Image: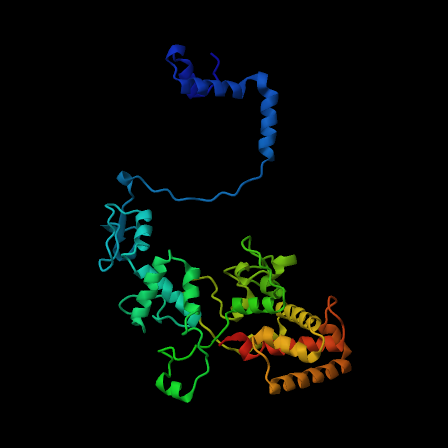
Length: 411
């Protein structure tokens, strides 16, 4: 007896009388025949070559809901021991929140419940975090806690109104930001008078615009914008801006490759910067960016000498400072106009008479220094930039203005 190589399903179909075969079964037999007949071997080989030439498309794992009659039970484990399941826990939400109406709620039911208008907590939390990102603190200061132990909202009616408007807008975050930044509260000055300081010392009633230092991402993007280097492309893979080699060579656990991006990718917005949890991007870490090891609702904001030293010496920022110096130098014919252009770009205002005088004196001092130290001029001006004492002085002047508190602080 010789064993057949036919699939079991095909053998079953061949045993059925031809008259009793359905159209689907006939098609299945025909497809199998076309896949094995020697008469079409060349055609099949051509098709296989074309299939092999196709690129490998990326795949992703997905979740599929179990049938409602075969749901997996969830237990409350005794003293947290996973080998000691005790009480069965049913899907549900805290009793003080609106109830999920589905009989056996699944993930989709939970998502719909979160976004329902009868459930305002999601909108309130989102509005509060957007407010905190703009003003430095939320209407509820405990961004990650809206429970019984959280701080009460300073302006509960405003929080509720913004939450309702946010839901009515279709959960449009850009619309919400536009609504807040066009308000008279946002457009206030951060200058404080003795009377306002006495009446509202903690700025609880927003009698002035609170000042805050720019985040690391905002600061790098500022350098990109003022130097005319910002790449405005949207989307795409992560990029690798310049950073010291020692950061990646001496990683927390092991060295890892960091191939610095070239072309426009080198100057993309900071949101596209590649982040490694065990060794975060050094510049952002210096300016209080979270490491990624845990989710945080609120960032700490500090002002340290290391941040000032980074702005003065970081290779990435120095490259952008050179580009700013070249752009300002080429944009105006006289030094007085160049100083004005530099101030407008960095602090969004005209310099005062005293500031213009101080900057001009500083510029003249730097020219004299670089004329006496040609090696410093050579070091500061890379091959892509003019090697002159005047241009080196412009680099130092741009670096000094970018280090002003007014340049790195949102007022």
